[in-house]
Length: 328
Image 1: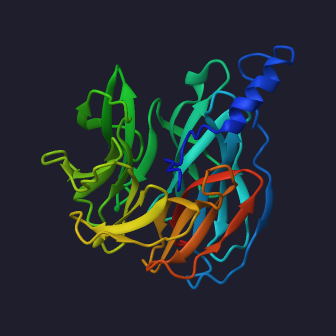
Image 2: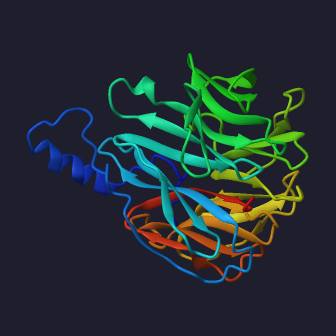
Image 3: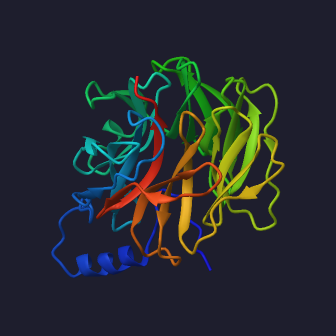
């Protein structure tokens, strides 16, 4: 039986064992992190993905701190498995949730500081595709998602005890909350994704998938109705006809209204965080081939119908949240 995971801040038994080991050592301060240099690339595989070789996939790769938090760096690799490189690394600061701008010129991402003061780093940032000119747009939030026209960024935020789905301009101004709720035991808003026409935003809340209008005027409407909720990481297809998502460690697709749900992966591995290729022919995702969740999480790619899955990247660290862009 699979152990479902949400793809971010994964707590493992290894972290508990590491904490016990570290407690036996002299105190080295609250900034001591077990994975500050964990993201070491081993290999990338050239499997001939069948898409434009200029397409790029950004992803986070890192490890788990003794407190169970993810500490990662941002990497970029060609969609055919070539030209793997680390784009951003900041010591004792976690970069994750990369999201390409529609023109492929910038990447939005979330940052969390584990050094004092953490407020210096935490929030939504953007960086040029070559890793230069990093700029903070918001001092809180995660899971950034660009609007199709590149003029706005949606992200999830938790401030003053309220969950909020926030939209701001691509320069960081004009922030507005589309909806606010009291946080639940299942968490806050997360993983917003825009429909290709820019009219709707799908997101996860309480392990269910919802859709609402991008201006906040209608919704949210819950489109998954599972009795044992475990639906996460929605992503609109490039044509807007489908939404991919994770359910209990497998990748599914459904219509934009939640009908015609279809399971794509049927393995013992844990699969999550699907991301569509720009042409809609492929889906990148993260897989842990240990069904109990104690293996290595790598980026994989498969056809949009679930066939021909292959591992794209293999690292000594855990990979998460792939984002696909066509080369500008």
